Amino acid sequence: MTLRAFALVLTFVAAGCRSYIAPIVRTVEEPLPSFEGKKKCDVHDYPLPTDLPHAAKDLGWVEVPKQENDEDTYVALIAQVCERGGDAITGLSWVKEAGQYEASALGANAWALP
Image (cartoon, rainbow, N blue to C red; front, top):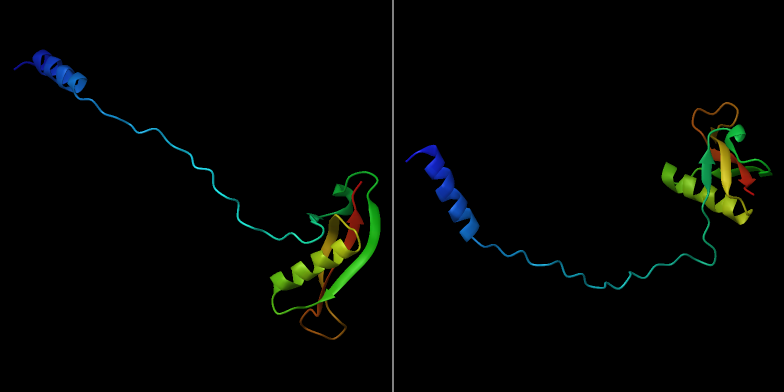
């Protein structure tokens, strides 16, 4: 059997085989219940005050004591900024008391974006 005959037989076999691909049926899923509270607050972390949009209003320094872990401390800081009506923070830093080795609080400058 030559290569040409083999290719012809293979073409007929491939053409004779039928395959069926089932269409994708999308089902409507119920969204999971979520709680956002009374007000959703989204705080942006800018590295420098010069990165803020023009006419951003300074709300002052916000500081929270250190929590069980760093993530809880950051969440508490963001909640404090939200309570002041802020949308952004700059200058995020750990605050150490004089003579202490470890930081006792996390602080940042709060801003209200236009």
